[in-house]
Length: 321
Image (cartoon, rainbow, N blue to C red; front, side):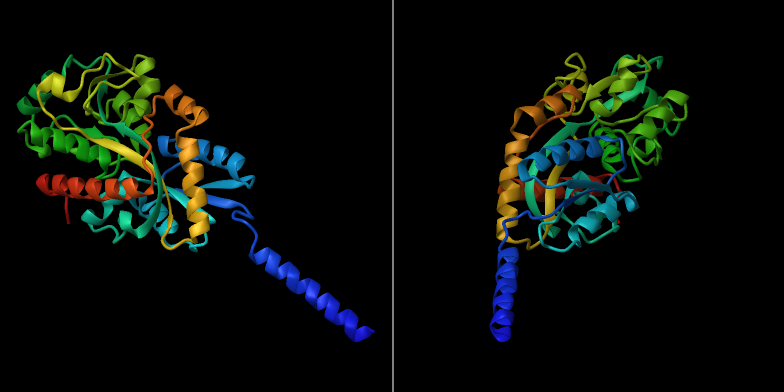
């Protein structure tokens, strides 16, 4: 009798183990890593996605900011996490830039692509009381006073540094004519602009929105093929100068390589639903963020092209190590 009871309990325990191991993904909370600081555009995008992903999966999504190393720390944390589908991240355009600078060996191929969810072109911001009414006015001042006008908005060699360096290169102006002042992002760069520490901040329009609306900053152009919906009266760089140079920051959901197929497929389906859904689009539109969706295959190809294009530009302006 005792032996039979023990066998029965053992069988029941085994059944519980089997049932647990076969439980449908996700069966516990998921961590969503953000490689940049709280309060910025990447953080805001990650948090709305996390909130909507909670509704889809019925599990908590813990958004964690892992900053440092010009984005290397957070991106490395995503890539090196256990490949079980319970750690994902919002990777950014810098993943196609950091390895060109010798900061890391990581690139887009270091991850499982889930979905591209956002892209925001660079705007060219100056103080509202600056004497420059057009980009051509600004460029003329740069040519007349090389080294005098400074710019900021990200780390040395970061996306916004590359935006203005590439623009100047395309306009046949030495990029070194505008010294770069490294910052921890667009927000501190813009504050430095308002305070008079720098003269130019080439960041996205959504990042500059509060200061533009407050009348403290003005945008002279946007580095895109079409005007931004947020400020349709701001001309494209091509319309303002004839230069076809464009540059945009992008963000996408990714996971470590080799996550289980079930986790990948469910994440892909959930992110597709979120990125094409009303709530996400309304949130992003209200904040002026651009919504661009691409599934995993197109996202992977997009990252390869972005990496190649960024590397070529970085080499041209002399910021490749």
